[in-house]
Every structure is written in C-alpha cells, then in structure tokens.
Image (cartoon, rainbow, N blue to C red; front, side, top):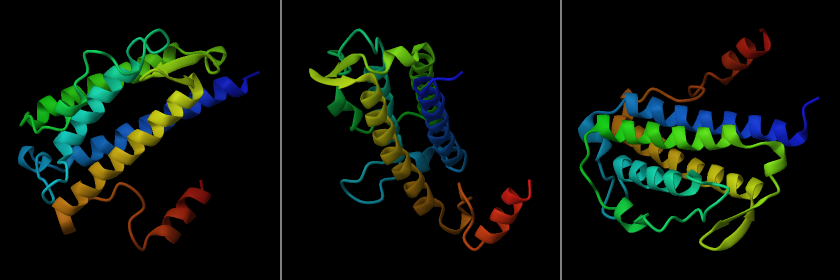
Length: 176
C-alpha cells in the first residue's frame, strides 16, 4: 500500500515535470535572439530567468539533505546579469539543472519528508522546502511562458487549452 508521503513524492515529481515541459514548449517556439528579449527596462529576459533557475536548482538540490540550500559558491546576483549565452547552451544548462532536481527527488523516501533541511540557515521540513521550490519555479516558468507569448504574438502556440476550445477539450477528455 502506498503511503501519503510516497504519493506526495510522485505527485510533486509530476508537477515539476509539467513545469519543465512548459518551459521546453516555450523554448521550442523562440529563436536565439528572442531568448534574450527584454520586454522593457528592468524586466528579465527568458535567458536571465533560466540562468536564475539553473543557479537556484543547483544550489537547492545539490546535497539536499546534508548541506544548506544556499551554497557558498552560488552568485545569485550574477544570475540576473545577461550572459548572452546561445539558446543551445541555455537549454543544456536548463536540462542539467532539472536532472539534479529530479535525481534528488528520486533519492528521497517518504520517511525523509519530515527531516530538517536549511536554506540560508532557515530551518524547513523537506516537504516544505520542496513546496517552496515548486512555488518559486512555477512563478518563473509562468514568466517565461508569458514573455514568450508577448514575443510571438499571434504566432504563439498555446501551452494549454486554446481560447474558445474548452468545451471541445472537456468533451474529448470526458469521452476517453
């Protein structure tokens, strides 16, 4: 019989996979130049958001149970400086960061969820630390998708149910 903790871990892995997929589906639609588009002064490009997520995932999910989630070698401020990396390199870094996250989640068991981990010396249960990152990554992947939509305009390929197609989608889903 599956425990609540094991069910939670499966659920959160599924949600993180969905987030990664939303980012991936956005990147497919964009050129190298578009990845670096800044909607206005002071607003991060998709490339900068990727840099930040990569730095955060490496820091939070490396040695997750045994070291503070804010690693001493992380330079968070640098993550927000445009690095002008080619799209291919950004996607490679994105994919490798997600591998670290998923590898860590795969290594966890239900009995780990109430253990204590630290982020910037602040104490969290493993469960709460995971939920914090799920929330944080959802926020930034939403930004990525929204900026992509702004860039592509009418050429944007929706990542969810197209406008005006909810009834059709519901009938399809319920008719399975």
